[in-house]
Amino acid sequence: MAVRKALRSSVKSGSKRYLAGILAVGFLGSCQNQPAEVPQSGESSRYVMVEVTEDNNTPTVDIEHYALVVPKGMDRKQDASAIMQVKRKWPLAMQSKNPADFDSILAKNFTFAGDGQLYNRDEYIQDRTAPSEWIITHVKYDNLTLHFFGDMALLSYQNRVTNENLLTKAVEIERISWGDMYVKEDGTWKLSTAHVIDYQIEDDGSVIVGNNND
Image 1 (cartoon, rainbow, N blue to C red):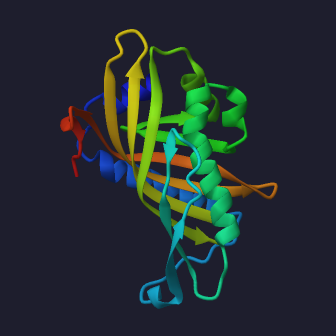
Image 2 (image 1 turned 180 degrees about the vertical axis):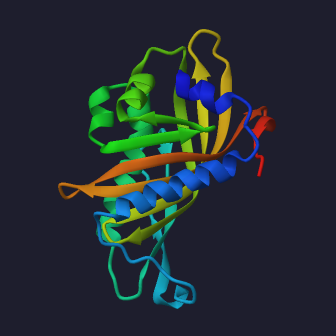
């Protein structure tokens, strides 16, 4: 798959800064038409962090808990739960390769960024539903932090993706760090942007390919 090849290629110098910039631009662009409460310097005391335990009921997608950051006195647990359902459905869609599964969770202007390459919504769905000898068998998520800004939310996390080659039965494990943005469309939370910040491949527990340039 093209996205997979893009991630596995060597990282150009400064790619982390590039992806961080893309995420910031995407966030600010979405802010133009939506209310947002962005914390200013010295305002961190206005926010609280709550640890939320997930109903971890999907055998191939492992999300045990996440940190929820919200303004004091504001209850966003229902919104957070809806977003985490989308988060859980994303790898399930990759496993099913059903375009309808992607269509239900991706925003109209969805973009995917990895290794300096950008994919729009249609390109991404086409890539992820194309036939491939590699399949995702398990995904474990760690260090999830969800931060709300009005009707938008930012989710940062790491995941460990286990892939199996259908022809050779070879197993490949990817470690990926992400920054995602979610928006509300017609009252439903959708994934708006997904950006790879760091990417590594393991072999027998050892990292053999790493994209960790600053």
